[in-house]
Image 1 (cartoon, rainbow, N blue to C red):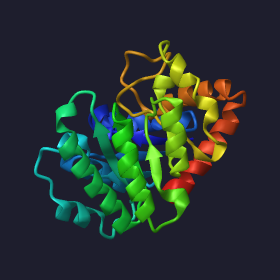
Image 2: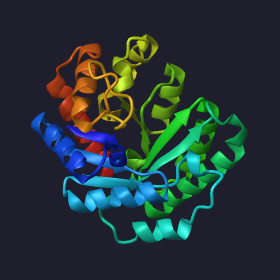
Image 3: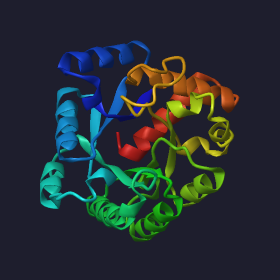
Image 4: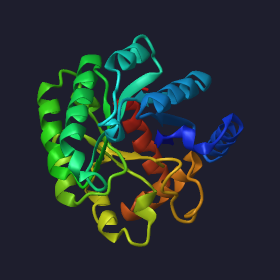
Length: 257
């Protein structure tokens, strides 16, 4: 399996990261995407990807950076010639906590989308309470995207409704489910799972956040993505082996692994 969303900086020191990676390998999670989102996190993920040959990196400026001074030049230099960087992310919009910053969030999001187009890299998108704005900006991105339509990007940690999902799929995005799909209060989310076509489904942990049942309350880690796969297999009336196979093929296609 491939865990397509890991914030390794949340796992602790180098020894703790190494131990978590070994536990993941023991349960068949043998590749991961290390996801950045600000200057320090981007550098951290690039270093992790340089250390482990089976880990690739995503870099970008996320919505939390919207009111900060961000260096696009530094980000471009980080990407230049680095084959371990396979995506622009995490980027996106979050109007749950800071609706007042929508304008600057969208300005930054569109800047990151333009970077993805220049670099022909897929995007890892965050969207919370921002369905309409996210779709509007993504529609412009897709219209101007000159790359492979199988490699536009993914809406990570999907928690939206069916209408939002269908519109994302129509734009060519993948849908990634996290441990939230195992939560007791996530019936509405579980009802959307079977609508995702096999060739657009991904799995993730969003480590160190959102540990799935039966690990709620613990620090999340890549090995726990197995619980996400188990839940998806049950909901889609298939086997965990099938979920592992299709999500691995999809991650390979999207990120060029």
